[in-house]
Amino acid sequence: MFRGSYEAKVDDKGRFKLPAGFMKVIQQKQYGAEFFITSFDGQIGEIWPLPEWEKKEAEWALIPDESREKQRFLDQVNFYGQQVEIDSQDRLLVPQRLRARAALVGEVDILGSGRSMKIANHQVMQRRVEAEAALAADSLPVISMADAMDFMAGQGKTGRS
Image (cartoon, rainbow, N blue to C red):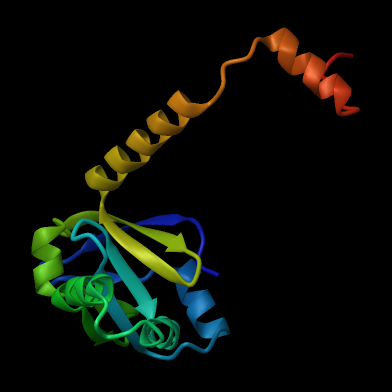
């Protein structure tokens, strides 16, 4: 399971070093050296160990080829995607088209995403996380501290000493 976030730098050739924490997962899961790097939205890169990507492809194979949604999705991931191999220095090459569209140059964030990882321009990711947090905060009910304490007391957990 890929979790957490790490800072990395995409060099002028488009390569970045996989964080040691993620390399440990790759070795433990025996994923091998092949990865599929793509994007579902053109803004955030998706880094999939090839065995995990192939599982996703098997799921999509169950959807009829005539499905417009399936074709749109496959066009998107194939437009930005390439199969790449990790090099001897634990680096992956970000496809040039994705690098240009998502501004994956210089400082980037590598984030765990369960069976895969994400790569994003640091500023883009920071804005996205802050926007999502603001949306979530807007949708939370507002309760008083007294009501919260009463709720906790009713759950058998008092915050009062």
